[in-house]
Length: 389
Ligand SMILES: Cc1cc2nc3c(=O)[nH]c(=O)nc-3n(C[C@H](O)[C@H](O)[C@H](O)COP(=O)(O)O)c2cc1C
Image 1 (cartoon, protein in one colour):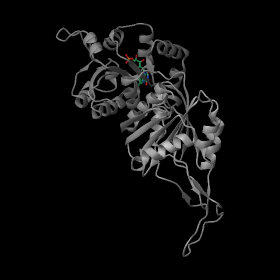
Image 2 (cartoon, rainbow, N blue to C red; image 1 turned 90 degrees about the horizontal axis):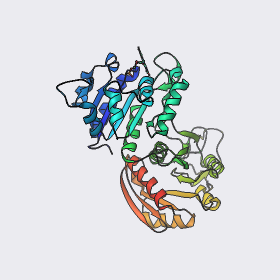
Image 3 (cartoon, rainbow, N blue to C red; image 1 turned 60 degrees about the horizontal axis):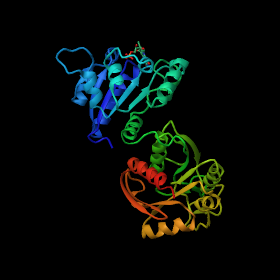
């Protein structure tokens, strides 16, 4: 999604400026071309040489250079997107007030490319109503913002203001290069992960689902402005700090939470791999070693079938089916039997990988999509919300 894209990175004078170096490396690794503007104050924190050594492209710090092009216009036109990381309270204030008094603020004034701010600062600076008003004003004008992370800050305070993980900035950049913030009116419920059914205090049965596809959908929908609730089960991948996540473990817990949260949501993507069976009894003590062990299992409640019954006309219900054989045929049966609007079918061997191939089957049409799970997630969202039913 970043291949051959032109990213103009603006680095401003925040303590997180050194993290922009890692970000630059990630952009380059994804195939992007990166030019950088550093403010005068950013150069107090890191040197332009460090950034240039990674990007192998110009790192520009001055507006007035008789030898160079009119940089603020050529850079403004060159960029497919401008990413300001870290973005100081100062640059946010300047842009909100229409100030163009250095190369970065003047380029921002001159560009027609999307602009993504990654604010990072002390918690009191971030909570300052002047800054918050500036963010609100700029957001209304179509400028894009990432929420800072909550946690321990360099200044010694604890609170909101941390520079996000660079991978998350890459996900935001990929999204806004291709998509708008077009889901702000949508309320979406997404389940992800693999349930665990306990056998005794030490043991459980589960499955290989990594939760990556559900997480990719939740991430993509949130970045495009949707109000997303994630119901996760035993994910062993990091859950983005900006997602509203509710944790569950067993199929029964997931059933209760999903059915209870269902009515307030417009669309539901059931990506989690929920166990079809659960041991009829959970041993209170650890089961001792013996020659053979026979366990008896009961059926768990079928969440998708239940949601299919409860679903109203204006809700969209999307199921996922990982199959090892007759993928399309089995998925179609599930679509009909459970009253789904769409089913996303994929081969079981892709469950734990970063790349996938899926068939999105609706009542009338089907589409094949392949690629990394994040770009596939964006395309699934487009298909579901474009075709509706
Ligand atoms: C050690 C130090 C750390 C700073 N860290 C931040 C920061 O993380 N975020 C921020 O908004 N400002 C921070 N500032 C203040 C900015 O550097 C200051 O507002 C400056 O005018 C920003 O200039 P620029 O936006 O043109 O780069 C820091 C200042 C110092 C001295």
